[in-house]
Length: 262
Image 1 (cartoon, helix red, strand yellow):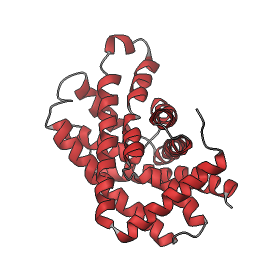
Image 2: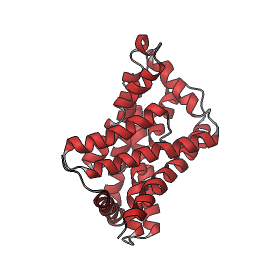
Image 3: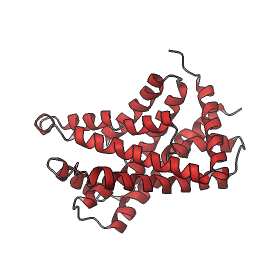
Image 4: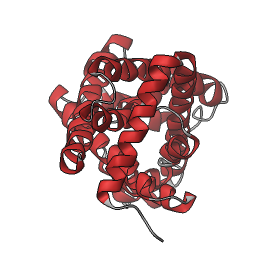
């Protein structure tokens, strides 16, 4: 196994960011379609983590970390699909477009436009997958999944705003480190392993990922959780998104861009 050096990883990230910026300017429909796919992929990881993580209550009841570990082991399939198949994920782009911006390969406005368009596309993809492929399929209609998802959604909107913000920083720090690790390898195994380790960690630790929460909270609402739409946006999606930008753009993109910029 021969992986790229840290400087080479940052150069690969800058090249990827420049390509994403070019797509933003020259082919917005393709960007939006790729963003919708990413939202669906992350939601796919979300439902898999829910089904497996809460599917062994007799084991996890006396082992509280086991449920977190099982969920964490399943969720990374979403990011693996995004990275390997080339979809557009808001949280990953928080880091990827920063080194290319720092080397003046595109404008700051283009970076913000990419983030905004991809964020909208991720939301559309996540909601569509959640409604058609999870809710209408009845995947969480029965126990223990019904109570699990309503409890998860309620817990996510009940935390203090600053707690969600900090957990959002932690989540995208991990996700973007996963993207960086995936860029270090060339084979599928290397990329999948790079995605898997940090993402498994953030799920097990209970950090807040804005795009994943576009799956968990809406599904909880569909299953009957007493949560208002504005409450979900105000108390979770907004602080998680701000935290994700800080964790990805500053702690990964800007940090490694500064360390390895030519």
